[in-house]
Image (cartoon, rainbow, N blue to C red; front, side, top):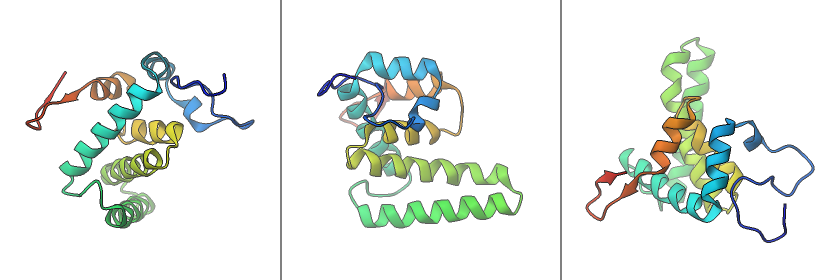
Length: 143
């Protein structure tokens, strides 16, 4: 990785393998082709849109942290009770809020990883399609 280069999913500066390298290859290639600046902007917009859809304020960090913890607790409780199907929405919400926290701290790779897993799918095309959406001023989403 070149120092100071702001491209997509190049390896984070670490000797350890980052968990973002476990994402589907087609998704990693898309992120790399689009570049970090574009993907970060899209993440910011898409995360804020989805947080608002949950009835939360994307700028209320304290409330988001409480909600993230509550979603994780609910997810884990449902997993432990054997109700894994019901746990998926809570897992996805917790991952979405986690992506928001990582993005806020400038941890691009972690934000991308968490956002991908906020979909509860292994289908990279679904995530890519969402990431390519553009929000118009009237709040409507288009491609």
